[in-house]
Length: 470
Image 1 (cartoon, rainbow, N blue to C red):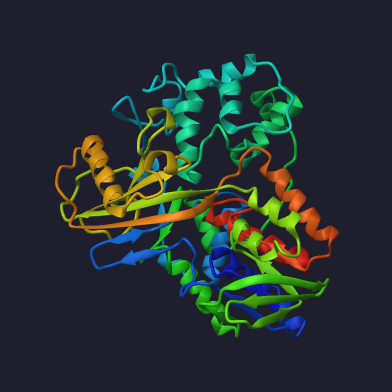
Image 2 (image 1 turned 30 degrees about the horizontal axis):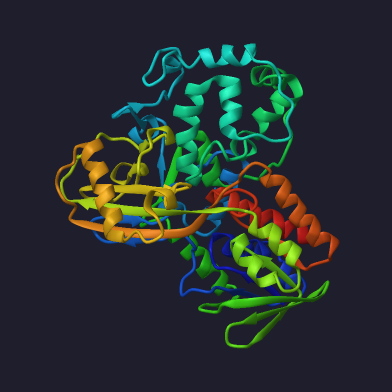
């Protein structure tokens, strides 16, 4: 038997690829998935009514690159193509992305023309960042924070007003701690190999491109042709993992809900015992772990304390989500939303204008994000949902000038929900996987703790880990 730990997107995708590659049928194996809670989907949760959708986690998916196209292939295979709602380049949610600086909202440059214009809060046109890079000396390093790298190559304003809020939006993290390889691995390699980003870019133009290729589905080709910016799923993003879960059940995958594993015992290189909280021992020949690294650490600590220590070194942050529904229409300017740079020392990370970027919303729907890397220092350990709602409403009032109370609200505190790829993360993950190989442990690591925090990354991580075991 093969076992999957965790029924989030990583675990469900692992099951999908095990079925797709005929790993189970070709080896006459049974597959079971163990989930500690009463629902699948992990942090992807949608609250749906006839008037609004409240997304508790991610709400849109990017279609770009191999990983993005791979997700679209899966979505079509699951029969969800008709449920996809794309945002194309001319849509306000694609053109209007803002930051809040000096008590004012500023729209970030979104086209070539705007790069040559001075746009607040930047003091110069962004094209000057290119010339800044060309003047900077090379600095040899194994890794660096994405903030330091961008400040060094493009200037402090780009680091403060473009990259720092972007990192807040992607992983609720501090750009001064997050590895440059998290988002800018290629640019960093250009600096290290060629002395600068633009020098590396110019040399890359004349090189043949190589890397992973995919056979594209009709949906993936459509996304390319129409140049989708992002897309959402009608009825809420939770529709996606629900369809994945149904797909696994329809293919006789044994999904065991409310089953908490308390210890993993590696008997030999092809036998694993999973001990659950009611004293049962489930046996498998191989385990795919999609649970957070700190959760896996607890399960292997008794037998492999060194592995547990390395898994625990991957930090996570807590994020509070405040969803707001106002019956009044058009309380906001059409846009994707805004982010707040950390230098503003705001209690919020940003606000997403859901009624602009998610279809089938009546009235005005907003999602306020709070905390992340700064959750404990700003709110302490005992903050209540009522206090977080009050803070969110105060900021919405101040920034967006919305003075009425929402008709409906929902507050969720998502504890330890997003891993932080701090400096040295990728070397740490390599060392963890080398330990597994060296000790012949029949386990594969899948999901956001290791190979990327986005939806596309998690799905692609499952695909690669399954293929590596074939």
